[in-house]
Image (cartoon, rainbow, N blue to C red; front, side, top):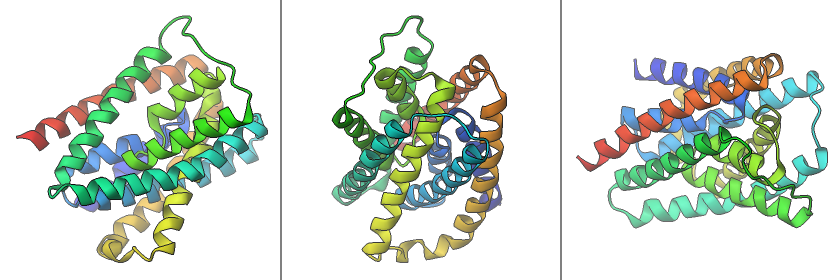
Length: 262
């Protein structure tokens, strides 16, 4: 039953994620944490695999639909995401090894996600919000690096951080920024998975192979559905979906923090 619920969560999260550029992990991570059926590193791995698969299907869909975007910005921000993904993964492993109780890491992640979600909803919906038009290659790469590191450490694969920072740094609207956000998600998670493969640390995840495989299938289907919706929905509708989902995510993370402290 746990696996069925997890797969449904992954499908829903990746559909919504591909629609508004959230990556899906911002929903998957806190929901699976709240179910408490495995450790925080297992949850991070399942979430990473799901959003990686979603990002691939979403990118393919955007390619087929010939979605227009600035290839230079996408390339540079993706380069930064690869480096950031590796650094974020190292930071996460350090945090896990530093605390005897893995729930402590869950609480830290939940609090950080809540802060980012709250800021994202406020900033995205703020009228005449201040934005920058970063064009310098170094600035674009550093933006991708910061996003990749945060996404990897939090195990959310994008989420409100991507959309908000892309809006702030490159003056991209939510719908337009979804494409770049998916690129960051892809390269960040690719960096994570390559690191795991290179260090041969897949052993702890063998018992969860079934949920990973089913999650990959659900994520691919969700990514295809979401990227199609992104193309059809208006900017206003995408923004409303973004805000509603962020409210749900905030509530789930409050639950995880309270549950971890009790």
